[in-house]
Length: 375
Ligand code: SF4
Image (cartoon, rainbow, N blue to C red; front, side, top):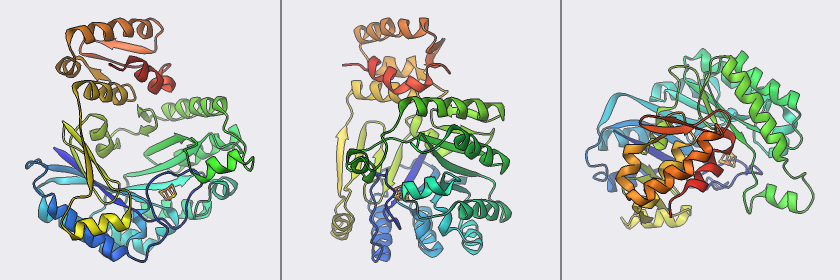
């Protein structure tokens, strides 16, 4: 089974930390939807008749589209691929786009999971990040979404904001718990190159980030959510039983997916490819029926390293059978020797078919994975 990702490259405003691909000019939305639909048709044979179990609208801000536009993409996917009976269909949305009316329409259009970019329930953090919505809008849209029958809701929260106190972070998590949000993705703020935040810190307009504060917030997050029955199934993701993201889990378990729209990535088990991150060039290329993508064939070492990177970030871990299929016996011996230190330190847990990160190692998962990378 496979997944489909659709990238909607428009946003109302640029958040200060964001380095995703988007444009704040949305005058050509219709043309973009037409191009995405054409790309879906052009790539109809790429999944080799695999059945689609998830569709994910990400971006950018997919909730900026009208329900009719979203519906047209869903319809094109249905008429092009075979889908499971009840696919997970997620829409990323910002609170200011989700009126009660829009929520009802989205439900009717087939969206059954909402990923809402709340980030913080405090006005001062939203202003600092240059978010387009208010805290009041976040709370209202969550209530409205639940009232129209969306039970599969995830919210994004950001911690490690320089002006965020420990108490405010605690209150952000508590608010989500109180509102019965069954899934939370929480991200440590990072400074990406060429973002407004990068500029602000370099110019001394914003305080630099504090790693210790980030680590402390992560500990609070882990403790609070675990105590409330959330499964910490990936470094940044926590879900109640039955609410673990099927789409993202399929990425982390190296299943195949197709990505449509500018900058969208695809994976087919042996190749990764990504579309051009330029809206105009993307549309021009699709008009000429040419796929605007770059393809990279993965070597066995690349596959093993991706497996280490992804596996050490989640509760399913890394699998020896998969690693044995990618690595030579010399490379496997080396990897096993390097693992010993982390197992002795309690940062990695061993089990018969593989190994995974422990609670104490999870904060260092990316660093440990890169230490284990195979040449
Ligand atoms: S709304 Fe999302 S994609 Fe758009 S700028 Fe903000 S963080 Fe980036």
